[in-house]
Image (cartoon, rainbow, N blue to C red; front, side, top):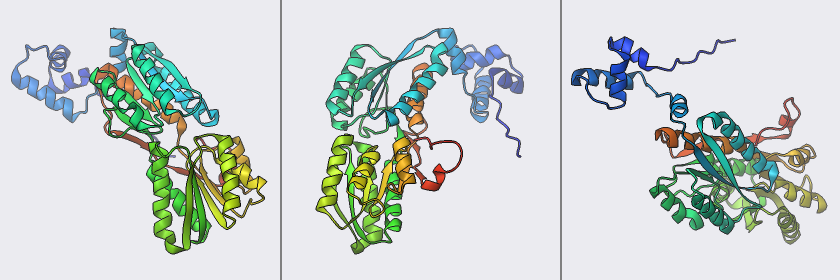
Length: 357
């Protein structure tokens, strides 16, 4: 087994010893206090860049004793998915609690763009230092996000994005890639021929819309005239509505061979397929694995599922906001993306429990 080595963090002492100057001199250059020979200052700044010196932000936060209240706007339902997001948030908050970070949750019961806008207004009125939000309808919150940014309040979007805004970054799945993966799977499971339907939450929601477009692009390109998409239906992230829609779609399209679900309503679609006695005849590909989806996979009702690391969607925004609020550090890229992972029945037969969404 290979020994794993980690890089030692470069300190002010390391730079001082390398250049044979005092730590105080290095500190004065780093904090722009002046009183240092220009040639020495240039050498120190060059060493800082070459050695990739990073300030100890945690220690600085302890000294400054700043407080950072972050508003976290998130739905409660379905808890099988959002519960993991919230766990990620609470984990990051626990790690940073000693450094002044606290979380104030603003819950909507389900995805609701107007409710999210009201909660964002509440958070800003409460004077939070930063915002994390999963926006159902980007148009409803874009102006608020931009105004917050101009007022010095950063926003990180997660799970779904407001790309043409002044948000700091987006954390979540590469939705278009996830849809393309689902499209290729559907093509292969159907041997390149047959009718397929798409169920999505909201056409206005950026991430699931990217999944839908990625799926349709691949099915259209690979399936050409042999695969037909019979339609797209919005289920509003409502399992009951999704169940009813699926039953109607199956009855209206008796030759249907595949269904793609862009959101976490996979179990509801699977239940409708069973009640219509079409298990094994309709290939079902969806997102997010929970206990019920796992059971449906094992019973050959769900053909494949794609996970998106929901824990990190709660964890990363808090760490990113802390770095920005405490030290002004922005993420290296405006898109902090996770790659889709496919779950098949054999992956559930090993040890370790359910794959993490």
